[in-house]
Image (cartoon, rainbow, N blue to C red; front, top):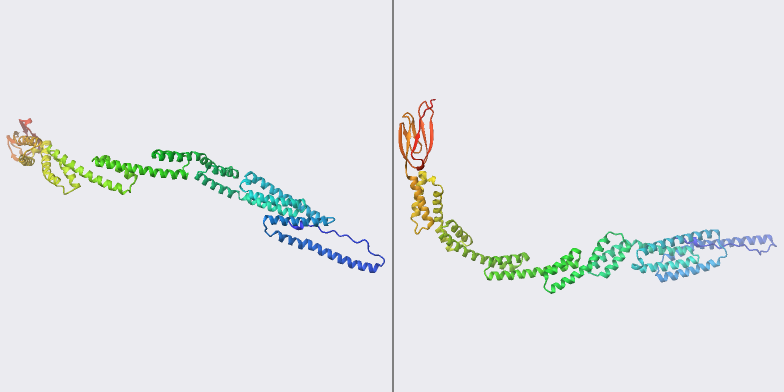
Length: 507
């Protein structure tokens, strides 16, 4: 703040020229006393003007007044200063220097204020802060009055007020930009195109190079399209074309994925569409269930469950569907098992009865059927095993088991074609397996011969045995000679069969 001492000028001193010189001693004494008193008085006035009066003015400046009162007080002080200035006949060098410094200070302050005002003009302050600009202008006018009255100190004070006011306004630009940016986003979210354009213009003036304006500009350009999509989707909804309405909103969502109007409308439309699809799926499901067309019914109820997994209506429908499916399945199993039994497919029939019992273990037809077909399935597998591997019948124990199985099969009343064929085939194979064929063994009378699993034959030159078809092993032993072992098969295709067995290699 400028010092008011800079704007005050002392009253010049002039000596009296009309004193009586007739009595030098008395006159000079009186003159000296008067001169001392006058100088003292002037010194007091000067001290009052220089020291005390500025403090009073400074205190007066520290009082905050409304703009109208400040202007009135300033005018009063200016008029008082003008009167005081006019009362002074001449100015001292000290006062001239102080006045010049005060003037320079006022000029610098007004230049600063003008520069700040110019920068504020570029960012459109007159639009978004007209009251502050007007207030600063009024203060500057009062400062101009003081300046023209050569009250430069007072002018500097007023210029400084105007400068500080404009400086504070300029310092608020970043915060104001953020506020406008926030309001701009809200206006876009509200779908207010005009307000968005106004705020965007203000924001562009405040910080035209801000990168966030690019993003917001894209949202503003998309806003008319979004509003049109909203209107179109509402029309489609009223026409019952929910899928098209959702599709329209999804297209708009691509323009501005963050726009709450689109997000809200899309969510609402999707809920309506889901509800519509759910109702349709449930209706079609019940229609199919009533016609006992269970696969389509399950498809529709599954779709409904996907749309609303927690729906009690869906859970009830699926429970009803499962009961119908079980009844249908049991009916099908009963029919299929009967057909399979007639076809002597005992394995398939047994599987059907077992599946039915898994669904309900108390089912009479399934329990009776399983008890009926299980022995037949076992018999069928045994007979099939003998037929598929007839070589096993050449083993005595296997042949005995096959004979017992064959006897059991022959006791079954009303055998079907498959069982009759099995009985006939196994009987033929058993007959062939049990028919002994002649086998001639030739030796040297010195080798002791054993036919494994049959008998020890001893020493001989030639011997013929009747053997069942199959595989055999004969061994020869002789002291001082290496043992010999021969394996051979007996089959009607190999008859006549001659086996030479002699120990010839001495050791």
